[in-house]
Image 1 (spheres, one colour):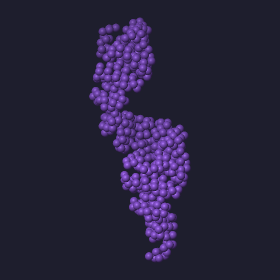
Image 2: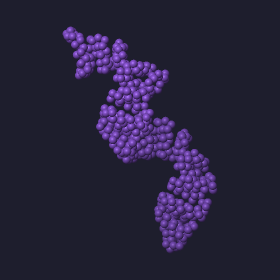
Image 3: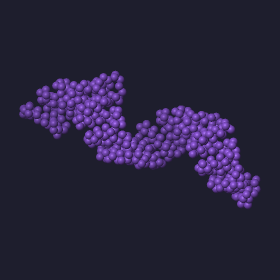
Image 4: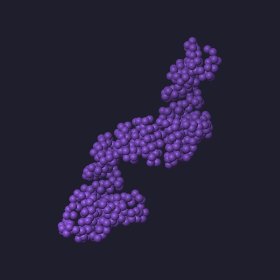
Length: 547
């Protein structure tokens, strides 16, 4: 074999031609390590790793202490994912040369691939003891610390690596990830900017910068970087998903739904993307499409995506499909969805179906796990109210609303809305229990609260006050309240009816009759108004009819 010719072929990258020469030499000189070792090297360069390993094994049978062969065999095994066998090769090498940095480094990488990061760090430290500025050892040490969630140690290792090598984008990239975890977002962006400077089309760096900008609430900028990432890899589902989430924040729901749809083309079995698409469709009130998305989310999560179950049930409620919603609740329970919210959802469905007793039972199950959930306590109170269990309803209202209505001068809009919604209902319960003074006190508290912050737009508040005053015999004041209700809605049948009854009590029969006639103009089959009209006519007599 012409050794100079073979070396020249290798220098020129003509490994196939060099391989022929080595194999020819091995054929006629089977005891000579040179042919087997050279053939293994050429096969390795040709990425025919399994064949290379066989030739290295033959060479090692001849010369078991050749550290170069142990190293190259280890590299081939490492590339093919046989990390344990690769480690054995590096250990054999180290047995003959304890200070071989490349062997320690590669052994560390293999240990890291096997998730043995503490052992990997020990290997990198062996390298750094001999060569403190070895940036690859520092970089890989940082990676292992990151996997161990020791982020400060990881950052320290990356920073040292950068001191020795500033042009390796991998270091900057992983440093950026670490800084982001440590909530050093601006520094993280600077790291990703370095990566982008080295490689403007590095879509992962572009995408990660976009994610950090989302954290910083720079949503439009984030979309710009997501778009740049997608210009490189248009079908990346993770980037499309991240972009879709930002579009939701920006309330661009149509665009978000389209983005999630694109992501699903690349990752059709990703239940999280199906869920987010469904949520965007819910906001767009496209409930049927949303249900299909939630069904797919459940399918690909093996029915364990509880949020999709809950949102599907909510969609069915919004569609008025209460029987289907109730069936979905039962199916969720059969699928071992045991979160308390399933009982809340079922209670809402039963309430919509006017099955208030069972609704209360399900609210109670939910409240065992969430005893201080104010909205559910109030909802339970309302259902008790609807089936005439007024005392229990009032007790539940009081748990949240209290009994002392001295409100602070400044109250959150949320708190104000809660009192404005539920105190009038409590007042109605008090009226039904003939506790008219308490009812009047309660409704006056609502009026006082609302007049501090807003105008009163709900006629029911004035109707309830009017009813309390009526039963207290304060008819003129009651009339004023009914008139205030009618000023908000002149066709409010309850206000017209109660006003008519009040006028009738004051012997203002003709004015009372006008109220009942107005009701019948709105609803000609209103039985109570018909009865009251007939009663008024009996009092007035036929003279009124002739006029």
